[in-house]
Length: 207
Image (tube, rainbow, N blue to C red):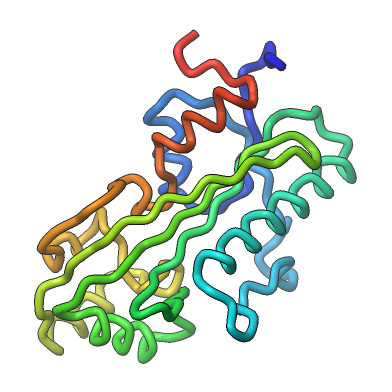
């Protein structure tokens, strides 16, 4: 199916994902899961007992896609492909989500210091109940980070809305020794997999 408008819905508040979509020329309309920040969270992102990171992120993306389509139908929006995504950081099989406060952000960075961790970003693209999901897995190696550097980083950056308490495109780049995988995937939207899914959904990237 081809879409004359060649546009999609993006169900994400992340400015990084918007920037990445613009980078590959994708036109999008924001689909906010919550109209106001004061409303309760629509999606419970707590991992289930004994749930693996891969199972967790697939479940969250599928749930976001289903909830997104509910919003589209409720608001009687034009049916266009919907893009959802979720990013998590994992270390030793444990999920490091978004820190709840500054203290937890500092603790996460101390845990990541001097070690390699994985960044998983899953994306889902589809129409109604036909949702295709792809997963991008990258490995990031941090150098040893001093307590002073961690305190300064957390004080000068908004860490509370970022998985693992850091953003690769910011000051934390100075902590990174090596990356194996997708830079854009670590940012929150793997462009290779995204382009594949959008083309399969009828979006023309190079009209």
